[in-house]
Every structure is written in structure tokens, then in C-alpha cells.
Image (cartoon, rainbow, N blue to C red; front, side, top):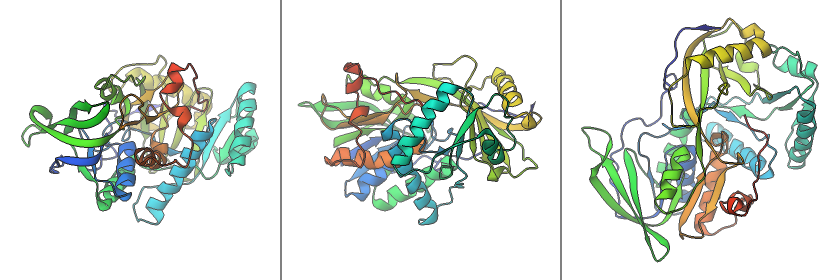
Length: 417
């Protein structure tokens, strides 16, 4: 595997709304959303559309955290019913944004293909397929030959089966950020970037206000010299892997750890990559999907890095090359033109934290998605709207609240990549 260039940050797909917003900060709003990734933007959009006055605060640029560094996969293949429903509902919204609202997301519905090499995985996926089918999904078990026909660059050595859903997809995350930011503003939400929350005020056990440090025009970094207090009744914490710091301001532990993951993008290939599904070798978590005329590839590190580190590790490319040689040897000579590292926000059971705090009224959280946050963002935005407004969400998320950890009731998601 040749390497022409890699970087410490994602540079090939530009971030949406990169300029610092000079939105005037109001004195009071109904809801403050913390975090300008897909989760926060979708929440702001849904809340504004429901008639709430909404202010979204992003300490840097929109989508600059884990969202812009995501692989862009959109799937509903999970082992947990809540995740299946969230993924399927979100996919509908992504399609709506492109086909009905005219946002070009580069969305391709070429499906998700899981390659299986362990008997226990086959048995478990068979149960998952039955659950997904009962919920209306078109997921099917495939033979090795059928899998190879869909993704002809793979080696079938060691494979004993596969799982495929033709309706799953992938898109460009930055485009989705831009689309949701546009729709949120149209709905009436205010969006402020370079705006860092430094304190949360609680009165009589309920959210009362936040303090925000705003960047100056000169340095473009939030500073304590330009703080502003904004009153609110509700906070939606959608700060991704940085959500723990927000919880700490209230004495609420959000058990999230940062896990570094790498992605590489190849030079254009002389095969039709856009016809191939998002292909995942489940036993190794090596995956690839089309990116322009080339491929986007990803895989875990040999040894996990559990820290806030976005520097690329040159040794990872060697590991990726080994995985390619084993599962997709026809791709072993491709050149890599770009690469970056991002962070998963991982919980103890690889499932999200979604809920409202019983200790601090008005504090709601949507974080800890453990690698599948981007693909669930639109649906979670609907859920957060309903939690804030006291409505019943379209999916039961009570089992995803923080309470499960204090009760010792982990809810483990098994289909993780």
C-alpha cells in the first residue's frame, strides 16, 4: 500500500460554516443546545421547528469535532431495537434532505455488507436479521459467493457468511452539517460558533442560565474576557466526546471515554467504486466504501488509544495494509492521498446516553454514541425535542438513560465497528 500524504486533521472534505459566527447572543432563550455537530444541529432544528426559541453554542466551528471526521455510514443494522429504529428513522431524514430539500449530501444507497468468519457471529447476526425484518428492514443473510458478487475486491478466504441490507447508505458528513445548519436557521434557531460554555447556573434544582465565553474578532478563540450570561430553562448536551466536561459543571457523571480511530482515502481507482456497498470485515472491523472515484478505508489501531489525541499514527497505515492484504488484496497497491484521526465517544456498553436528568431539571443529554452517532443524529434530534417538550418519543429510549449504570443494567450494542 503506497502512501503519498496523510495529515493530522481532515482536510479533503471542507468543514461547513467554518467562519466564526457573529450571531448576537440573546439574554434568554427556551433551550440552549451545546455542541455544533450533527446531534446538536438536528436537535436545534427540531426544537425550533416545534416553536421553541433555540440557541446552539459551538466552541469552535460547526461539525469540527467527531462529525466531520466520521466515515459517513448510514445503517440500521444493529442488535438493539432502539438503535435499529434510530438508524432507520435517520436514514429517512437524510434521504429527505437530499431528495426533497435539495441538499447535495453525496448520499449513495448501495447498502451495508458485513463479512462474517466466525460461527458465533453468524448465529448472532441471524437473530439480528430476524429482529430487523420484524421491524420492516430488508436485511438478509448471504452466502460467501453472493457477498463476493456485491463487493468483488474482497478475498473470501475464511469467510463463512455475510449480511446485507440494500437500503443502508453513506454520505458526506460535512454536507449533512451544512444542510442541518441551513434548516435550523430557517426554522428560527440561532447558531453561535466560537462560543464556549464555561459555567451552568442551577437554581432550586433546575437549569437557570449558562455563561458563555465568546471569541474576539482578533484571536478567534473563546476567552474569559468576553463572557455573557444567558438565561434558559433547558439545556441539551450534545457535545460529543467533550460532554463529560459539561456534565461535570452540574456534578453529573457522563461516562464517556475518547477512543482514537483513523481513516484513509485513496487515489482514484480504475474500478467503479460507487457501485460497491459499505463493506465491513466484522472480525477485524476493517471497512471501506466509495469516496469520489476512490475509497475511504478505516480500521482500529493495533492498540487502542484512549485519549484526546488527533495525531495520525504512521504505524496504523502498516496495520491497515496488513488488513487489506488479508481481506482485499486487489487493493494492496492503491495509493493513499489523505488521512486523518477522529474520536469515538465510548460508553461502557457501547450504547448511547439519551435522557433527562432527574437531579437537575431541564438538563438533557445525547452523547456517548460509541461510533454510530452520525448515522443516528437526525432521529435523536426528534427524541431530544420530545424530551424537552415532555412528549413521548417515537422510540423508547428509557433504557439508554444514565440510570442503567447506577442500576448495573448494561445495555450492550453488539454490532459495533
